[in-house]
Length: 347
Ligand SMILES: [Zn+2]
Picture (cartoon, rainbow, N blue to C red):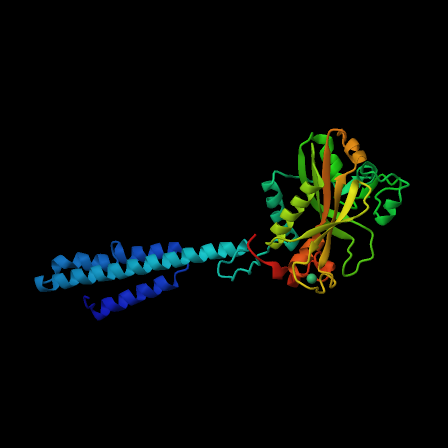
């Protein structure tokens, strides 16, 4: 690089110091003008060339170019610094600071009940079932009356019901079964539907009882539907949930909306000869089910002389507890992140 005379070197150093100290684009332009325009150090150097002895002309030209290049580079760099600073300052005013570390966003996951519901929905839709929804605040008619549970029926005492109005016409549904009647009102057979959802009972909460829990109703209505269809559907359900064939048995059970009614037990998936989950019996009570009572078919506007059907009420909370080995139903709705984190998976 061309050496500068002590005088030119000191001029350049002074100009660079001014550039570094400049706090506005306007100042930078003034410094540039001072050096490059007429009367400035660079312009003077260039203007002096013709008057110099030929041997010194080349050196003077190179010195002028060096001063010009260094000064312009310094002015450009300082200009960018000032612009960046102005941008940051304006963002700070708006509450944005690009230099701050971003807060860590925790990734959530689906609740274990939601995971199982989605699997069951996939399973049942693959068998041609519709997935239905129903109101959680239900009319007494759908929750009880249309399900063959009239007002004076003792079966009402089996479910401590939350009532929503003084007249008792509105209740928090105590089971998902009201969706059966709603489904039949709007559809003609063949009907194949499931209805997962929350249900509510005024129960003393303990490890196996909660005031809010999840059920999944199932309903099939068609010509010549038999208990065999019911058993096959339940075995398919269990294979889907536990990933293996599971033996089932039916015991007689009384539910006003089915006739005959059954309790369906599944062979304990966790043991061969008894364990704490099955209370050493090797059987687990899984769900109430049965053939839809003709009064319920009539309430849904369907002729029981022509059609028959089966229905089941799967205790989803219980099924999820069985599948994951959860020992207290209250964990499910506790909202405790330490509990829920155990079920993280992409879903
Ligand atoms: Zn067992």
